[in-house]
Length: 120
Image 1 (cartoon, rainbow, N blue to C red):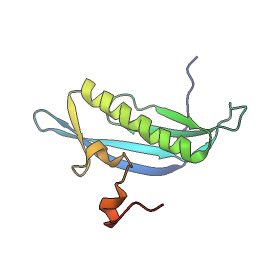
Image 2 (cartoon, rainbow, N blue to C red; image 1 turned 90 degrees about the vertical axis):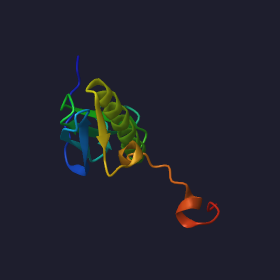
Image 3 (cartoon, helix red, strand yellow; image 1 turned 45 degrees about the horizontal axis):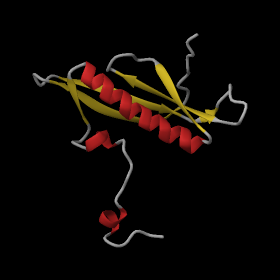
Image 4 (tube, helix red, strand yellow; image 1 turned 45 degrees about the vertical axis):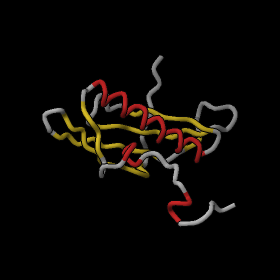
């Protein structure tokens, strides 16, 4: 049995490019739906739907967490992994403003951002 998800209200979207070896560029759209309570959860878990358009399967998938923030963060992480797999399978390189991880990895080095020690 395959579960299908609805994207619902889009709360975030990013456009990246798939660049082929010959230089051809194809737009790829990443969309995140609003996190919501998981209807199937008996423990109050949350679901965050996401969709990748233009790089393989355009279906909606989802990630789950114990609250809305964890579901959103895991959805972004899942999209990063899926994009890497699809790029490799399609023999393309993905780009967004030349940023590593397409700007989808949030792990700031506070010292570098603010020029001082990490806040406690």
